[in-house]
Amino acid sequence: MILSEATARDYFELLKPRVMSLVIFTAFAGLVLAPGHINPVIGVIAILCIAVGAGASGALNMWYDADIDAVMSRTAKRPIPAGRVQPREALAFGLTLSAFSVAILGLAVNWLSAGLLAFTIFFYAVIYTMWLKRSTPQNIVIGGAAGAFPPMIGWACVTNGVSVESIVLFLITFLWTPPHFWALALFKMRDYGAVGVPMLPNVAGEKTTKQQIMVYAVLTALIAVAPTYLGFASLGYGIFAAAMGIGFVWYSIGVLRMPESDRVMVPAKKLFGYSIFYLFAIFSGLMIDRAVMAAGWLAGWSV
Amino acid sequence: METITLTDKQKKSRRGRNIAIAATLVGLVVLFYIITLVKFAGGMAG
Image (cartoon, rainbow over all chains, first blue to last red; front, side):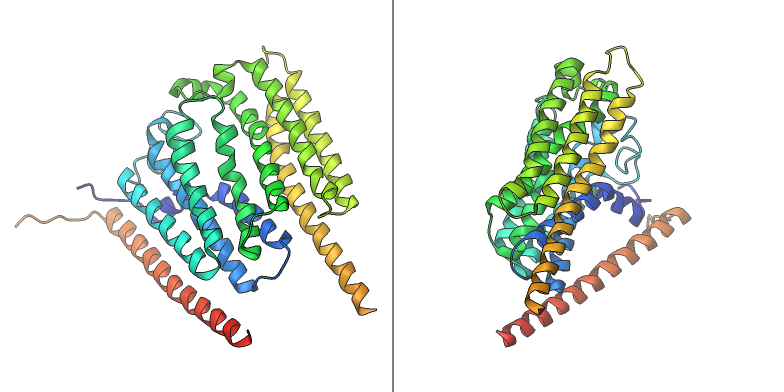
């Protein structure tokens, strides 16, 4: 038996807190944007369950990927490769949190949301981490679905259903993931190459990656305007989303123009930074738009 | 009998983990209590 020196903080780190903050934000957006009403206390519990479920899948990912995490500079200090948490402890932690988050979401909110959460955890831990990540350069395109489910789960918490609008929210994050992650992969490709993970830049080359970044950036920009087109966001949001989308495409053009000899890759780093800002801005824009429309609607009634 | 003596660092980290587990358990109790209250209130209103 190995005596543990793991602290509570090490276990918290297994939950990938930074990914979790994005999940909390987009799940909250799904909850706010869905038509209908949810008890605010139940809403908070729903977000908590989704966040813990996402964290659990992070812990399962770190359990399975400990071997390659140990080699890459970006991940070598994670609790398992650093030796602070034993792999089987992380596995037990991830499985326990998965079971509890799904069960509580089902009991407190509804079982459709719980089912979607369970599927998300399964998709990230098994389909992405265990299967696709190490076998295809399209890994993150399909794996991105796991990160795109939270707004859909938030939506399902309120409506107990899946609709075109919630699929659009899903698609925004889904299509956004490849340019976001490939920008990172471009300036970290030697890391991925060293551990044999087939990231697109290593397998298909930088040129193909840059072109595909461009394609997905355009698709993201188009789908982000769809809420206005489909009538669940205002024209104001549509103009804002279009401007943000032009920015996204602009930065990806910068990456496309980046010469192969460029090893510092400032445009790729800029695109990566902008992509995070972009996603927060789009979901914030949708929520602000909804709040403004709701206020206008109430004002109309009070006259 | 063979016994294991924990180092200070191991004792300190164990204490930290125990506190975190205790806090989680208390949190779950409070969570279930709140869920019950909200569900009951909803049921009566409905």
